[in-house]
Image (cartoon, rainbow over all chains, first blue to last red; front, side, top):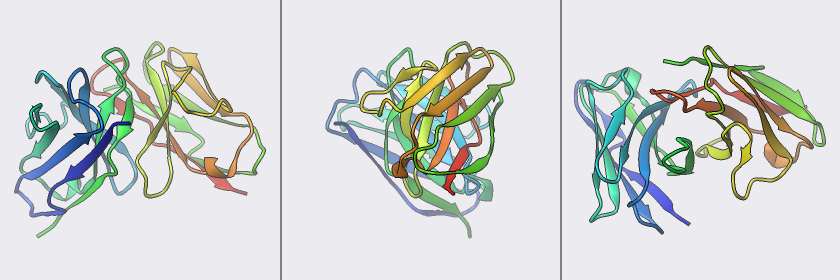
Length: 119
Length: 107
């Protein structure tokens, strides 16, 4: 059973960069798409983007100018960077595995990392 | 972006009830639709994908139907562990988008 675990700072100052890493255990990162999804304080779920293990990415246009998702297959992990954050980026950030290449739904999730943007 | 809506936003029900939740897209998403359950403080859990395919390990009391713009999640006999919030998600187009959620509360 694959397990995902987010890690990174829980507090980020406005205008700075949010950085999170998702460690994948119990299975290989190879062969799958991996995604970041965030949940706002109002409980809305927002798809941030995904990366194929080979490095191909696709981002939400609403965030594309500020977001980078990368993968490190040697460490079995992938990462999120979101620049120039504001209070609107305060959310619980989840990393997730896409079910398969044809079905972009998420069958495994991390426990979530609360990131607060505040000075 | 494709906009997803759900109805109702919340409702009360009793254990043993048959309940249905609706999800609507503002344009056709074919059958590229998934459903999730989220309990408080937990990550979403995939229940159904391709509109009607039950994810491995999900009880058969959950079922999904629909195509195009209108979809339904049905729980045939509500159990105590089913009181939660349910989200739909389309994956017909980028960006992937979710519905706002439907919360089932205990009556």
